[in-house]
Image (spheres, rainbow, N blue to C red):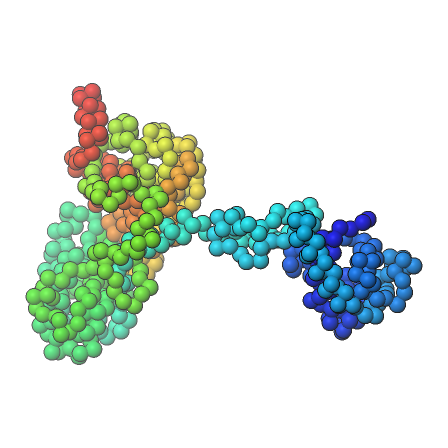
Amino acid sequence: MIYDLDDFFPFIEFILKKHIVIVGEPIRGEIWKLYLVFVEFCNQLNFQLPTQDFRGYIMQFNEISDDSIKLNKKIEYLSTVEFLKERIEWIGIDAVRILKSKINCYESHMGRKKKNLVTIHPKISRTLKDFIDNKSFTRVDLKCATRLNLELMLEFIDRPSAKTILGKARAREITPVNDFPKVCNDHKHALVLSNIAFGRKDLLSNSTNSTTTNKKSTNCNPSSMLSTGFVHRKIYQSRNLLGFETYECSLSKVHFLPMVYPHTDLALGDCSYLDTCHKIKTCRYLHYFTLNAIGKTVSKMTPTSANKVQPTTPKTISTSSSTPDTTTPKTTFPIAEYTLGECFTETFRQITPPQWISCDVRLLPFRVLGKFAAIISDPAWDIHMSLPYSTCKDDELLNLPMCELQDEGIIMLWVTGRSIEIGRRALTKWGYTVSNEMIWIKLNQLKRTIVTGRTGHWLNHSKEHLLVGLKGNPSWLNYKIDTDVVASNTRETSRKPDELYEIIERMVGKHARKLEIFGRMHNTRPGWLTIGSQLQGVSLSEPEVIQRYNMYMKSST
């Protein structure tokens, strides 16, 4: 085989960089070691190995370099095996440098390129566009290359796209962030504050109010009977009885104050249901009042401000030590220029007010509602329990015409342990691909995972599942912004965490049309249309929806 001048370029670079190592320890000029080191050299620099016949390659190299590689015997008299056992006596470095100079001059004069030199630009581009537009990038012959640069290819595959990076940055800039409240772990503070805040008269009044509330509602929250402002006002009036540290702590941290009723037996410990207990009037277990922090210092605290204080419920955890502005999030200029997935009227368009329709979801024609970018569905699955609301059969839910609500977009379907597979089958039937699954980890009043649920046959359920379905190929969706786990407190029966709404709004945008099926009054919110049988009346603001709904009502009467 006759080699071209370009074929010797890798070996020339190898000799010039490694000539001292070649003749020294541990190679000591041995040809077989030299060949292995040369192969590794080509792999490291992404050079294509020019030959498999190393003996013929060295013979031709010596012919054009004036015998710069000197062996004990002449190469032409040696077999391939004998050649590999030979040893180099010395290397003519000057001759190799002259050869390199002649090759460079020849290529410059003839305008030729190194056709057999396969190299990948050593500097990794920051974006895929830079990688493609790189003029020095040459095509890799996968069949001839001895080592594929798999690391580089995998890195580009795993590297987040510019859309993902900018979507996260935009969400970080425009999402209000509140400091996560710190919880006081000193039980002595809770006992002292409880003795000051709750007298026997207050507890008796609270127990009487809870009895009245129980007749109207299936869920009683002991903390809701006494306002946070009332408790903080009583603590302020008795601040001289408290130490400075305890009083300052009551303003800056959350405390769980024990509420000892006349019928409470402290030996029994905490109630398993805590603030969701339905029988607080007779429950002998210990309950707590949640005293939220008000974020004021002692010098700024006055009786008026203590009376007006309202509990705050932060929705996101801040990793910053400072308190950011939660009313007008800061937006930098580059992020403001990124508008992918946003409406072109984003800057001046108003978010629609809450809309809802009280109806039987099974009977309402979905074409009246129009198309939506995101849907939440919380069906009343038949879980074979006595529930304060009616349930739907599996077949009734599967037969809902969900295909009329979306051409492309996402759907979030709440499922129970028994109905997970039914939910997957329903999404497939409706034309969706089950792309992900979220989990809501339920926390109790004390911010711990619940240990006693009201569902489950063999084990109590302390979490709920949310199936995420994808329809079509919506390029406007913002991916990989939030996690698939939500840890949030339980509230009324079947009420889901509010964090889900914010997650969806970050995915589809605040101005996108969003629908919630099987919702209640506490689910209504700006930018959303809610339908369900437990709503009150009809409230619509979109002219097209009003027109279609009125036509439907006229035709149905």
